Image (cartoon, rainbow, N blue to C red; front, top):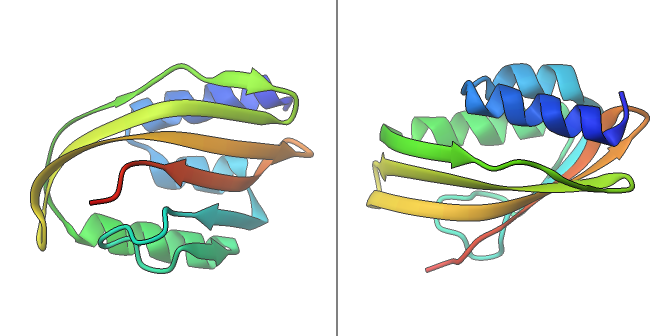
Length: 123
């Protein structure tokens, strides 16, 4: 798949809430995931490899009490990179209800996502 196809597929799966399927289908085994520095509940700022990315996602899902809504924007593609806006309105065990919006940036190599990085306001 080219970058546009990977981006379109990721958006489709995220809009359906199929994040684990997206990771299994679209991510390289050695992918890197980077969160914002100082983000509450984000855990380690940078993890590498699918086992670590899945664990990070599992811990995040366990921190959620209820999801009230969310959004996934259309992708913007440039070469091997794409970005999209995402939003979630959720109640967390340790932070209460907190709506959040972020820009997600991805790099694609050989038809797989090899890098993801999230940008959002902290605090």
